[in-house]
Image (cartoon, rainbow, N blue to C red; front, side, top):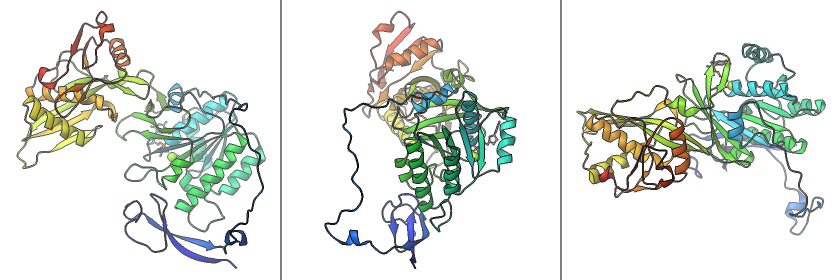
Length: 450
Ligand code: TYD
Ligand code: MG
């Protein structure tokens, strides 16, 4: 009879320890250790014997031999294809994370039904809702009239046996990995051991049978995918679905992609008929923009391979607090502090006794340093209560000595600005090719010349 023993696994990094502690010794995460019961198997003879080799020898392959070029499967959602790097690769595994209610189940159900309409055999496995609930949702999305199949199950062995019996699926969605369990392990669904084991079984099956596997993963309070980071290493593509409950816009972002670029985004709108893609996001992010308002600047940004115009808004208010508030929505707060320090020292604009609020309109999160110049422009405009010239865009990275630096893909940024009717550009990049098409090109090398 095999003995069982207790161990503690960190749900953040997956490290195992024999004793519980409040903090993981490996990754430093707090309250992340989960108790698990494992059956202790005696070590096999081969492991104990030094030179023993077990297993069967396998066939080697040469790196320059023929490859079977995998054909990408385009979904009818072009925004989804963009994020995937041009569609699904058969046999690939994609993990989608996002806050509860952001629309993961909705978009995957839409994809399942859309792909089944164009001839793919699709299966939607749900562990969170009943089959009837999924059917009801499909009906509401007017997507029920399709050959796609639904399966309400949580036992991974049964799920794989069902898929294997049908022998025909091209796409399988698992919603969600936290609800799936394997009867080979005694720990509860959602624990690290279960998540790792079930994911591995599903991945192996999908790779062997060339099935497109899409797995939904829950996120933790901090917004990371729950379960060990290992989960992200195991899959080919990791997508995050971002958006706020009160905002209708949703952004699908690739954070890891073995078959395409990362940080590529797709923009969607949640409507009463599910998610609709937005093909011209610049238009959306500038939708409520009013001219002649102080404290706003338009940033010509790049997300993945796509140029995008976004409005940056700043508000400066008097403060009685010893440490006035600084808040940044959609941008890094530390970077805001740095720009404020540079403005104080290099530009002579001291806002240390003022509250400063910065927001990226439309719920987008910007990580590019190229936004610095647009942020500085919005702050200067807010501080002096003077609107910036209408129809102008800004891009450039700001250094600590107040210098504005060149940024990449300036031509794409300018082209997008022109497309949206913006004819003035402020940047450090030389844009000689656009002297004729742009009304004004302002070359900003130092904040003080601004
Ligand atoms: P859901 O896909 O269940 O989110 P997740 O799987 O990420 O938890 O989305 C649920 C939300 O979407 C819910 O708040 C209702 C809203 N919704 C719509 O606005 N329109 C729709 O057509 C659907 C199906 C859902
Ligand atoms: Mg869901």
